[in-house]
Length: 148
Image 1 (tube, rainbow, N blue to C red):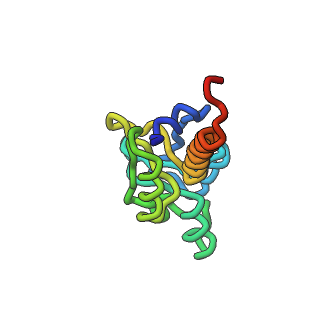
Image 2 (image 1 turned 90 degrees about the vertical axis):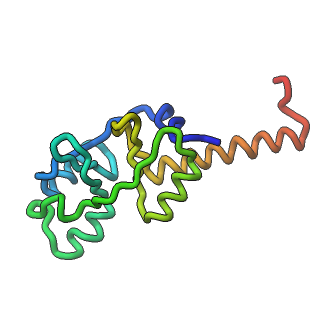
Image 3 (image 1 turned 90 degrees about the horizontal axis):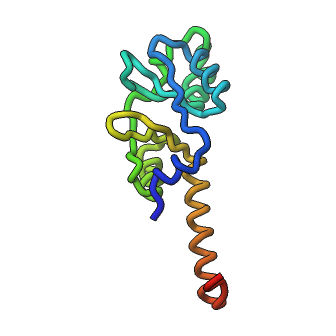
């Protein structure tokens, strides 16, 4: 079974993007755009206090008449973080995302955030895992691919 660590190791860039709790939604959107990411962690005194995602903005921002340049990030961020460890199985991540209705899981190792698993990266990793299993079964059924 594949773990989160494989996603971290296969990813070319594992930078975690953050904004301070004093930031506006617009500030966070700029960081997300520059980093080409769908979520940023919100910090206060070097501690993670929340996560802000594109979905938070879509559902709680403009649709409710809030201007990004005037809205404090703390008004839209999610405060209840669901985190995983590098040893967490991908299937467990999928279950957590489903149960908690989230699309991003910060990865915690030794009290430090070392990355974020997005639903996209998770889906790609699960698909790759399934393709590997299918290929092995094909070779077994057809009696090919041994000793090559």
